[in-house]
Image (cartoon, rainbow, N blue to C red):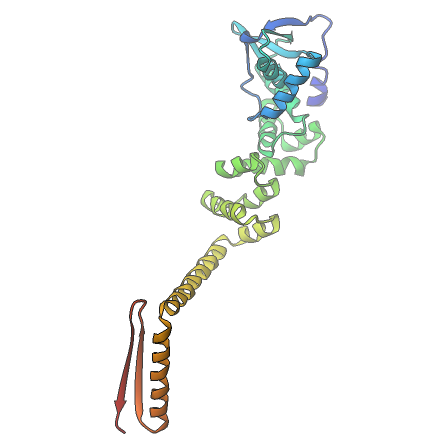
Length: 282
């Protein structure tokens, strides 16, 4: 029996269980909740539905200390809090820690809007809680082993990269291209992705030779700086001075053509222009 099969009826009302109205103040969130962030907009939307139609499906909790811990239904719980409900319909199902954690993970995996990092952590935790291999987990959840492996690889990324992946600012394919790089190089390439809106292929090309890419980039920046500096020197020279310099150069040219040996040195200083002319006898 698969994990999903074992828990697929967890939201149905057991014959020997009754729905209870439990005080919200006595309920705590599940620490094993795989979803790190809850969209405020989605909670508002759900709250609006609850306010209009009521709660159609009770949450599932278990007794914990002098209160209760959510097993399934944290979004419904948060929406009820937003509406300032005092109580919420709930089914008490006293599962073990591992069972409760697994059920919370499975419920969230069945939703399609988990970000890639939360999904990867959910798979990793399910494997640990139930002693599963990647192959057996993939079989249990109806996914290919390569699909599960690719998700789990994302957990090798640095915290910085994971945060951008979780927020949707880069894709999972961008993230996989960075796996295998050092944390420093992951950060460098991530900055390039964000600054230049790089696609996956461009990211993969950089990841193949990170040092080569940044060395080439630094060389280009250096050469560009030299070119711009030369342009600034030329542009700062007054127009009338340019005319005088050209006149001198023409005179030097005529001297050379007449057989006079001439040495010319120029100093392109940003503030001063120095030209030295040395005439030698044969």
